[in-house]
Length: 423
Image (cartoon, rainbow, N blue to C red; front, side, top):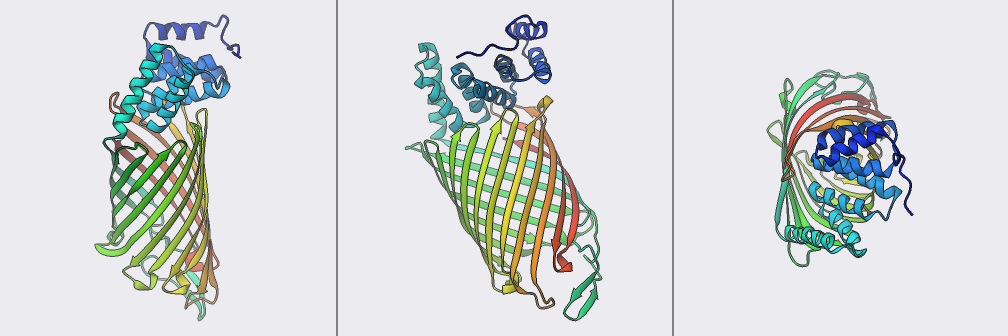
């Protein structure tokens, strides 16, 4: 059943925007449709033309959000689903693109449409069978007002009485940090198309303006098979991380992770992840084995995206006072704003209970960690052909940690600006 559009009758602005679109002035049409959307949302016809004009101006994210809103109001609108599939294809979300193309194909569209869809499906098939590379290069600057995570109070209660901390790290110190990262992802697929091999490598460097002893270098590598069958996706990854602090080896991690995702539809998915890691520290007392279980979900509607995860982590260290059980919670909300700006609000929380009391303290350590994060990001440039882009991100995070042991009670604020080239 077709719904009557809110602008079906005489509406000068809508008709003017539509005429601009029809004569090929997609940039002007896109601006007018966005203006109309802010005045009155909920019209599938308005959302459809907004999506079409955004697509023609290479703003594929806005286009996909607009077509998703059309399908929420009119689930059988095959033309909107076809345009959504094209948008996903341009964004590189080939699994979602293929799923939507096939849904349209199942409804026996006209022969011209079938041929166009088949061309897309052939291209997806060809792409899925090749070596595919993508990644990013980023440079950024951060400001941290408590680089050592120094405790709130210099007076610490121990088994021998109150102790006054002194020296480096006894009080909060601020510093600027230059951060650089390179990440390269590779996937190889062959017949059957559902089976592939996914690998990812990362190099990261953090250099402090004043506290050179905190300079950090990280090398990480993940690799393993990935399966895609219908709405189910499975990943099995081997993991290796090597961390260097102040030009000395700090920690090496080796492990394996498994993840199962259910892609219910274009707007909702559920996931379960399990991970085992072996941590080899330069200080062998902290060597540990970590087991982690996590449930994840992501829901999209309109210009909104909500992600959440809950989990539990078990740390079994060589020294029992480093061992703990930790409950985890992460929530992230993203909102697409005008002018291609994306806003994010995130919250991270964990609670830790340690197995034994540390030698200087009479109580077992208990800790509550809270982090609130806000940020804005926007593409500064985007390629119309191969999905490359230059993206700017500004983020602020406030961390507050409470513990029954004063040494571990601290708060900090971190602000950073990052430029990333995605390819």
